[in-house]
Image 1 (cartoon, rainbow, N blue to C red):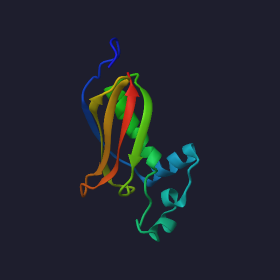
Image 2: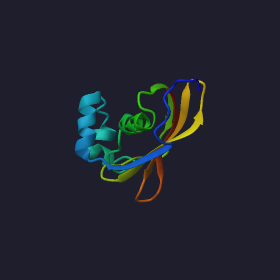
Image 3: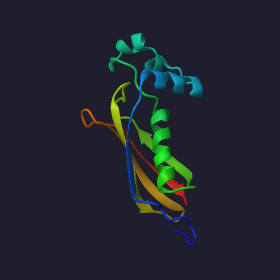
Length: 131
């Protein structure tokens, strides 16, 4: 990492959060993503998930806040996320970000969202930030 750049405040951070259907609806209004899988319980009940699921961008917004806490003022250079399982309304989720490497530009971080009820990972990925 280049000399004179910001040092991280910690190497790992986590928080728990539970989103309601009202949260999904509010995020849909703000983002414009009103896909029925996120906002229509009747439609979602007929899908393989059985109920509405969180927007991926909503999960990434929380993860980005964790990244900002670890590397204040860090500029995001890239992010790659996957969603192997749904995050459903009313479930408690654990959001985690961990610095896993230093890069020439700054840091590479692992990102994870896990359902606490059954320990299933619902979102995983990495991001690189310039510090």
